[in-house]
Image 1 (spheres, rainbow, N blue to C red):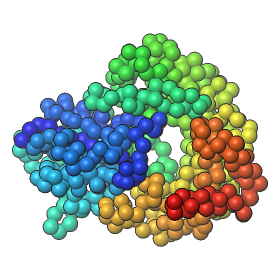
Image 2 (cartoon, one colour):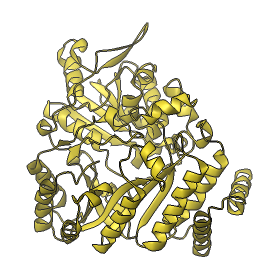
Image 3 (tube, rainbow, N blue to C red):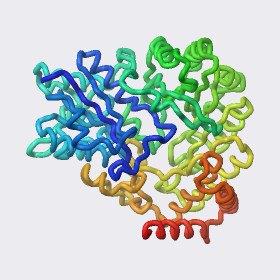
Image 4 (tube, rainbow, N blue to C red):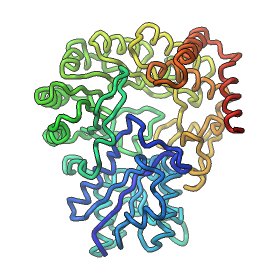
Length: 501
């Protein structure tokens, strides 16, 4: 057996039919696989990494025959739910081509639904959660011998179902190598659209893992643990130097769930970034309550702007405080508005994300969110107001149990997930039993999209139509009037006519 491993990051749900585009600006790096590849390389394995999002149509039996190493240690597939259908398609093709090659699944979906993933015939083992160490142990066991039962967290299919070796501990991030950036072509990811409408050459950097907050909708407690684990600052600085030294990259996206959790640590990183690369801009996540609490005050915001901060992203989620309490978000509507104003006072664009279709959310509370989004956009034209996206029920957050109590039935197996997901690769509103009017949800998604995007959509649809769709959505949101949605009916008619053509 060789010591070669092929890791594949599947395309989205649309990739199965060949519809996924490979030129979409803003695609993030497959960060989990880059860390995993680095750990495997350090252990002496030769790793090939293929991001199928960049050329989804190419992952055929012929492609696999050419790129699958001869007698590899294993084929690894890391997938979020939106990638399950394409990942399963790749796994089945690999199984047909090379029946003896072990197929290992990991990533978010396999971590949230490990048993149903492991039960699929196209899967040999599942390594859930952060598999930096367990994947190395599995690779060593397959090449050098060793008991698979010693690998904590490993799931496998047996005659009687699925067996597991127990829960694996989270790795110590201070001991992990830097991501294997050399395995990918950064130029395929670098062109990014940013909130002010411009295009930059950007790259993703992860300085920590985990989050200590308790949001009821978030699966991170299962995926990453409810503890903030900081990577060594010197290692982060070395990664920035590696990525930025050529001058080709001019934008950094700190993709941590909690980047601004320790202001001294943040300053250490940013002083290095701005001192060596003063032209580079950056963006990161922040929480709205940090502004009221004083962790992020006016002077700190000015410092962030001076070091290149272009945007701070916030999960605003709702325009109703009772819904925010239901979400256990531990912020208020007033804190969100204050945070947006504080960012703009410092010439930093706030990027605010909202959701709807929450179990227990009334129609009136949903309309509160839409009205709040419109108010924010009217008061702060430079702010980016995104969504509302549809609530996605995943294990980990306490709302998932409520969703099950209200009648949610998750697909019974991996093939079911691939079959039942909508065009965007997620369960659609009609599959969520607490939503009384799925049509309204779909129409709101369509209408509010133009509030968020009409300045950044290029020439589609016609600019005149974009402006009017955005203006109509503003009016509906502000007046809480969603009764006669003629624009949505025209869209459905146009879609029907295209399908017949």
